[in-house]
Image: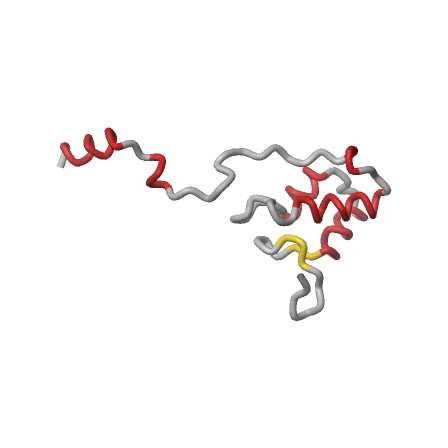
Length: 100
C-alpha cells in the first residue's frame, strides 16, 4: 500500500513504511524482534497478520538471508481481538449484582 506521500506502508496499524524498516536495518537492527520493538510492527489491531510476512521479505532482501533464517515472534492469545466482556464469567457477574 502506498500512502499519499508516496511511501510504501508495510504496517498499516502503526503506519510504518518500508523506508523506515530499511533505515532500522542500516542502524543495526537486524533481528525481527529488534525491528518489531523499535518500530512497533505487529502491535496494532491486526497483531502482525498483515505485516510480519512483508517485514520478513524486506529482511531477506536487505540482509541476504533465507526464509528459514528469520524467526517470527511468538503469537500470544488472543489472536483475534476479543471484547473484554467475554473474559467475565456469569458467576462473577451474578456476584457483582448481589452486592448492590
